[in-house]
Image 1 (tube, helix red, strand yellow):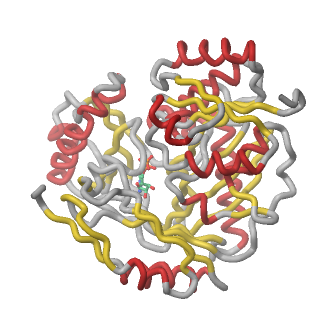
Image 2 (spheres, helix red, strand yellow):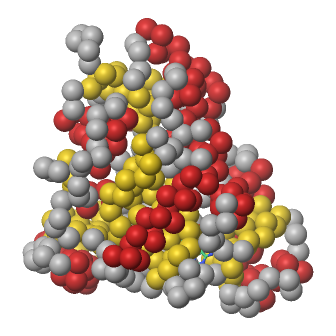
Length: 418
Ligand code: ADP
């Protein structure tokens, strides 16, 4: 082995969408990769040269395993693929004395109540909130909340269980629906006390944007600001379009960047990728959420930096100490549509893919749910049907291409297994 070569530990949970893209990125760089994974099966699928099976839910034990591994095979950076890896990445980096986000900050980004408290303490615009227990009487709570409001679980992601209520009757119905989600086996099995709580927030009207950035010693470099041109007014908050560059005026974009930087600081985030969701209205620039990870799903494929560097490669470069400050996003407008699940059932067939691919500007269409599998829409579901990617001369033409491609697709979903 070349002893100068840096070695990274890439934390890839079995269900991540990002394994292929992170591994492809690592192969572009002169780094050795150890894949930290929670199941051996994924490892054989990906056939990496080295691997470490760790339990992402047993954080102390997993950290010790990583430290023991690093005694013989030194690790120069720990890179997490998504939400499920951020706390372990912080703990392992701390134990290995690598630059890292504090463990407390990683916890704060994974608990929506803790995040709201820290943002409020730092005076950052974020909605009023109230924490309630699933054992409380929703009728009584509904008498004291202001409407419209949003109910949400504390630790879930991808808008799962996030529901708007406009009046007491909707509140009670939404409350029972969130409780049912919190009691589904996959959530309840985690045994977290947060699964017995619901956050109730004031609904913030306005448009929504996302910011993708990277922190180096606490300084935020903005990588992209995405517009979300479809209104996100509820009752459920299905993401569809992400289009960059933003069409908002430069001073509004500065406010978005400034607000994200202050929020990251308030949470204690200092190193690595950040993904923020913000809402804008006449009153304020509001933080909906800041995560210490990069953009989810396959959406990172919209971004390329310098001469074709992927977001995953940029993240690994940053982690091993290669300068990324000078890297700029390719100027060409780009976008993605996350294809929502129209209704529950079994996905039988996807029609129109060839016609959709022929739309000018469409680069790729990926259906990420295999034919024959069950599909569940929000607020209970956790996945999208797939992703459509486009590039074009303007953000408007990218949006139009995505809409047209989606119009040409038809999803055959039957109600029951036959
Ligand atoms: P998750 O982490 O599951 O995505 P979020 O808290 O980010 O949960 O909420 C998901 C989406 O729901 C947001 O992107 C936004 O569109 C909407 N949303 C959440 N909270 C509010 C709020 N207080 N006001 C308005 N919209 C909200």
